[in-house]
Amino acid sequence: MIKTEQLTKRYGSLTAVDNLSFAVEPGEVLGFLGPNGAGKSTTMKMLTGFVAPTSGTAAICSHDIEKDPLPAKTCMGYLPEGAPSYGEMTVRGFLEFIAQIRGLSGDRRRARLDDVVERLHLGRVMQQTIETLSKGFKRRVGLAQAVLHDPQVLILDEPTDGLDPNQKHEVRSLIKDMSADKIIIVSTHILEEVEAVCSRAIIIASGRLLADDTPAGLVTRSRYHNAVSMRFEQGVDLVAVETEVGGLPEVAQTERNEAGDGFTAFPADDRLLLPGISSMAAARAWPLKELHLESGRLDEVFRDITGGAAQ
Amino acid sequence: MTNIGIIFRRELASYFATPVAYVFIFIFLMLAGAFCFYLGGFYERGQADLLPFFSFHPWLYLFLVPALSMRMWAEERKSGSIELLLTLPVSLIEAVLGKFLAAWCFTAIALALTFPMWLTVNYLGDPDNGVIFAAYFGSLLMAGAFLAIGSCISATTRNQVIAFVITVAACLLFLLAGFPLVLDLFRGWAPQVLVDAIASLSFLTHFASISKGVIDLRDIVYFAAMIGFWLYANAVVLDLKKAD
Image 1 (tube, rainbow over the protein chains, first blue to last red):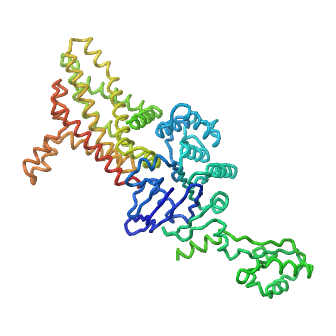
Image 2 (image 1 turned 45 degrees about the vertical axis):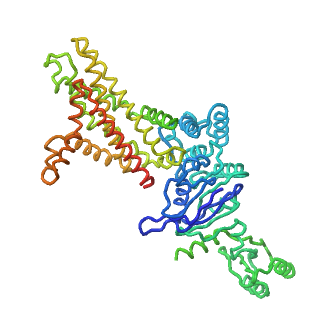
């Protein structure tokens, strides 16, 4: 498992990471969320032993990364931000180099190489030098390098940055496939990614931990959670409808949508809105185009949590 | 130990994967020959030895070795691959040694390719080959010391030009440590012991005897200690400043 205690990094007077403590168990995919400059990358650099913390500790597979770096590094794979590698090497040469450093040999080496090359679709670029590859391929070479030794702990700094939607989907399924018995930490500022792959999300801003919850749990913090949105055909008296819905005892307030063809009703005290509104809509025969229950909006929760810290 | 070998092979292969290796070797051989025949007066001396060849090596290395060493760590910093390398299960000292040995081996290859000089002198006369091999050995040792200085300085910056310029300056200081140009800087204020100590650090003085075929243990220890010291400093620099 991964465990950090009061992990702190200061650069002069700037505190990049401030007293971060958390633990991750096998089977968890932890999404590391935060605005740019929140300290996500610095935290990952400390977890992987590239940056020494100013104070506090981090342990990977129960090896302290500062006191006992080699065993800790052995049990993890790391994709640094921007997926750096050696541009003048061919993909094959680079992956062979990583395999050697990771101590893979014989059949296992061949099997692992075949596996990552197939999973990341690197087959047709194996003989190309890395500097001639597109951004998407470079990123996949970086991922291949990180997962080559089938590590217990996988730390990925923005793994889908620069990939097209198909490639993003593939990387996410790769992460899901590997997640069963591993610890995976993924940093991202793409919120849909958190909902797609993570079993848990940590939100940090200005180096401080602001939220630590499941994506579903975070979503319930949204004011849209259990709200009801509706859109109408043209010609309806929207003001009258909105006033009527707003008059229901379980509705706290209503808010017109951006398109101007409907509105969202927000619940008072977590009460259920859908039965009341839908029976009202049926009774009045409103020309509804759409009526749906909101589960909550992660981007709104994210702005709410991190925006407050920035001020 | 195996990690040193793995990094060594990767580094050495990367020299030959880019034009760096071929340009370096070509220029090195051209200059080594030109200095020897024109400035050194190889033919005019009428002696069957390679002294005019070896006596220009310190000056050749002064510019060519920093050109080789400047990229050793600065490029890793620039491209970000340093983060990859130092988060692999490799110790700092293994990474430093692997890279250094690859660069040193590369200079050894360049030096070995000057063998036509040796053939020429053997064809023309009857030189003392023991002296020549001692001089080759000394030249390689000196190149190692230059490289170790360059490697350490390269680790301090992500800018290869800065690494080059500072390495040239530092190497010049060590080359001329026994000469008034450097010593006068210290004579006015430093105690005589320090001035003597600085004078004894001169590359030229230590290389002079080896290039004449006199292998003195003190000279070998001197160069080995220089390499050891600078590589250790290299590891310390990296440890203090892995990220930018």
